[in-house]
Image (tube, rainbow, N blue to C red):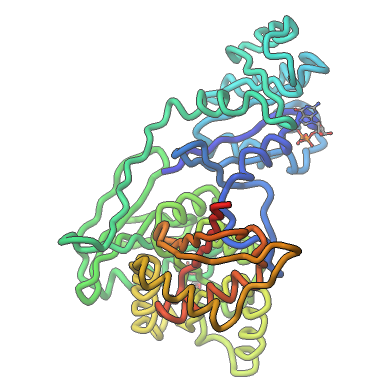
Length: 439
Ligand code: GDP
Ligand code: GDP
């Protein structure tokens, strides 16, 4: 599981600036989409091979009643509770304030690993001013400049040092190994997650239950459907009671993010009776950012009439336009309708995400695409696409080599993407196109 790092501190110390720096390197599959409302509180980051989730508590509305524990919004406390480590951000220019002491006291009793980041310390890595911060009782101050990118690497390396580097345990459908589809079911409370999972597990031969008793009550269930093995990843907002799952009130973004990160394929459930909410759009945005394969299922299809169905279809097309590559199915978990096609869609999405693409075929596709439509000249530059190879799976990445490729327009990239998608019949997975110029 990706470690979760919460950024905590009083207003104006630079939490959001640090958050942006920690999460900006993530590979957004495609930059900006209409309808994608980004959640700026949670983001994925990477330091070398190590990935993490960062939470910015900065934008959360402070509670106006007095006392630090009340003052720190409830969300901040929840963020700390959900985090594996906390980065406590202070400001070298203002020195230690009373509020810093209050926050330090709160953090000391939280029983979490806390790292002290002294921000705005550009060019001050061994300033005597830093010594003052020892009095917070949080340990060594790490001087950083969030704005100028100084000291960030050593801070995050210290934070991540306690966590194991994940082994590459990805179940690739290579060789003799039977592939196991790691499936996460995402959706807001009440959409029907537990109903669906119980229906599945009631229907299918249950291979095994295993419940690693981690602090997070992770649940994972292995089961089989028509010879295809699935591993159901811990799902936010559910608890297992005996053999059945039941919904619990609490919805956790962190748990959702971790489940998505841990999955190969994500099933996004939408409640037909509620339409696409902001929360649905946020979850869809996380899935898009993760690069995972995704299938959208509109549940409770039985509960709406044909007029409502039409309205809903349209709103999905606009509000989830950025997940255009995902198939949209209609199901009723309660009435057990549409579940056959759903299995097929999940398996197809998985197969697409792990499709093997060879260099000769990709290169031929690129040449054919260029023959059909040449990339536009940009000033004196004429982009030249020479050859392509596969750079990764889940999501599939196609790396195109050539000259002046920085000048290839986004629309041309989409054109290339479309041709590759058509050829390989990719459904339910994003496809990433990377350009690598040799000049
Ligand atoms: P937050 O309220 O804790 O999220 O703080 P912000 O990230 O919004 O930053 C508050 C102010 O501090 C902004 O004006 C930032 O530009 C500034 N700031 C953030 N990081 C640095 C830094 O490393 N050096 C300097 N000099 N200013 C910074
Ligand atoms: P969760 O919070 O996402 O786990 O949602 P639940 O599985 O607890 O379902 C919430 C409510 O929706 C329950 O009352 C279910 O009976 C109902 N529900 C779930 N699936 C369907 C469905 O396909 N059709 C209808 N009409 N109701 C459903």
